[in-house]
Structure formats: C-alpha cells, structure tokens
Length: 454
Image (cartoon, rainbow, N blue to C red; front, side):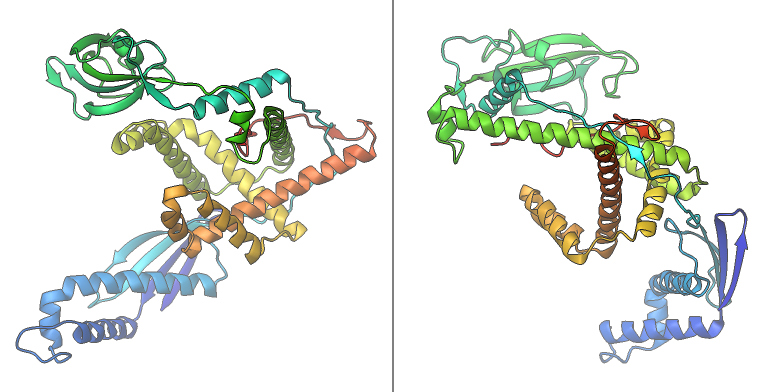
C-alpha cells in the first residue's frame, strides 16, 4: 500500500492511497470463496461453483463490496500509521476503481487544532436568587388540572366554540382541486390557535355538528407551508361531535389522586419545590453559557470547516424534526430546513468552537465520563422514551452513538466545573467584584423539566 499525505492548510489533510495488486487479488479471492460457500447454483454442488460463473453472476456486487471494504480498512490503517485523527468523517474521492489495474483514492479531512485553553480561572458569578410566587404555583396547578381533565361530550349545544375539542373531517382545496396531504378524517382537534395551524381554529369556530361547511382563507406567498403559500384555499369540513374539558375540582381529593399527597397544601408545596428546582436549573444554565462565552472570546481558534459543516447538518436535522413534530411532512420539513442553510452557519460555527474549547479544557483538567456514568445516562434516556424504548436502546447499542453521548456528557461536566469554580470564587470574595469578571447570564439556558409533574 502506497500512502501520500498532503497538507493544503494547517488543518486540512489529503491522504492518497494506492493498493498493490496482491492486496486486491487476495481480498477478491476471500470474497469469492465466502460467496462460493453461501450461494447455491443449479448444477453445482454446494461450495463448488467455478469463480468465472460467480464473476458473471455476482461480479458487480462483489467488486463494489470489495472496494468499500478496502477503502475503509486501508484508510483506517493509513490514518493510524500517520497518527492522523479526523474531526469528522473523511470525504473519499476515488481516482481508479478498475481492480484489474489498481485501487487508488484520496481521503480528505480536517484535523483537530492543538489548543491550550487560557484565562478560564477567576471568573466571578454573582449569586442569583430565585423564588417562586403564589401566582406561579397557581398557574402550575391550573396546568396540571387542565392536563388531567377528562373530555365530556357536549349535549346542550351543536355549534363549536373556541376551546372546544371536536371530532372533524377537513380537507383543503385550491381552484376546486384537493390539496395533496391536507385531508383529515375523524381527527380529534382542539379549537385553539395554539393547537392547530393555518387558522383552522377560526374555520371551525361556529361550525354546526353534522352540517358540512366551508370557509376560505388566503395565505401569503412566503407562508411556511408550501402547498398553501400564495393561494386562496377553501377548507371543507364536517364536525361530528363536540367535547369540552371537564376540569376537576381543586381539593384534597384531587391531590390524593396525584399519588403520595394527602392534601392540596402538600401538592402545592411539591409544585413549588419543582418550580424552584427548575428556576435554579435555568439560572445555572444561563450562567454556564455566560461563562462559556467569556472563555470562547478569550480563546479564538481556527475551526475546521468540516466540523462546522457537521454541526450545520445537525442543526438542520433538529429544525426539520421540530417541523415534523408540528405536523409538517418529512420531505417538506427537510426542504424547509435546508433553505435556512445560511441562517444556521453562525450558530454552527459557534457550536463547533464551543466543542473544541470544551474538549481541550476537559483534557487539560483530566475530566472523563466513566462507563458507569454513561450506562446510567443511557438507562435514563431509554426509560424516558416511552413506547420508543426499543428504538432508543438500539440507537445506543451502536458504538458511535455511545461515543457521541460520552463526548456530550464530558462537555457538560466541564461546564459544571467552570460553574462550580466561579461560584466558589464568588462565595470566597463575599460579594466583592474587584479583580474578577462578573457573569450574570448569557444566550442559551433551558429547562431540565416542566417543573409541574407531581
């Protein structure tokens, strides 16, 4: 195997690999021997089919598999021999794939820059006081009450009102023709702008049970749903039944129905505790992000383009998944996400920068995630996946997915270390701000839970 390594920039590498005929011939022979043992051809005893027959019947398939196998194995060997670690999967460019001549290809990739993180000590963080008001507890209790409220069929009226739940049929038409994918049959819908899109809450409000109706709505040319954009749409509907939430009475019996509580006062205290925990987590998340912003600003680095592109693909996939969760078809969601390509560029660059700095800092501080910690996190994810538990478990059976989760957890632990040290320094300074930098928040944050689950 002949290997040539080129550097087109400080971080860019091109490894050209050309395999000897002997290596190719040996792999072809192994592949045909394996195929001969597994295939059954009429007129030949098992394991005795001539190679020329196998080549005629399965030649293209075998050559394709051999090329993929040789590229993978020889790339890994070449990178190992030259101590090269790509930050993202190498791009493979084939130059010669006629196996009667040779196999020559190039692996193009970026390497991780060498980083020593500086100036991340002595960051001051003011203690953030968080509290929970009675109004917040009341709101949490009301949301819990609504979530647990059963639906009761409405018998004393036949017209739909805002806030109702209806079983309805709906379909959109443009120029008299149905719009593909718009038909809903016997779907339970909440008549609210927060629950259904495209202004359908207004379309259904006032509809009469059992009476077919229609309403027209116009959508702007830049509307997010491409099948509706720029069109005047006729929505045809029939409401079959109306339901209303029957809110349970807020008393001790309601509290007892939630589990271990004996009174409404106990339930309120639990909700208060959960809300306070959530508020503290959100405050800590903002401080972590603020600390990270300072460290990034103090440690500019050259970011590998392939790392930025990978983060950009992740952002687009996350955005597409959000659109799908809102009811947008998968193909359209991916197309919409891809159109936002440029908008994700700056965020992708920042995420790549953050990953590089946190990984370097973790190495400096010798922060690791143990196998036990990783297994515990995976178990928690699987347990929270509900009906998707098997799929989640299968996902983390793959080594690359476990490695990605381990890296994410390592970065979390690194941010926790920054937060812990900053809070410790702030406590020791007894509120003195001189000589340090104060961080009160920053972009990001987030919640670790709803805070309302009793």
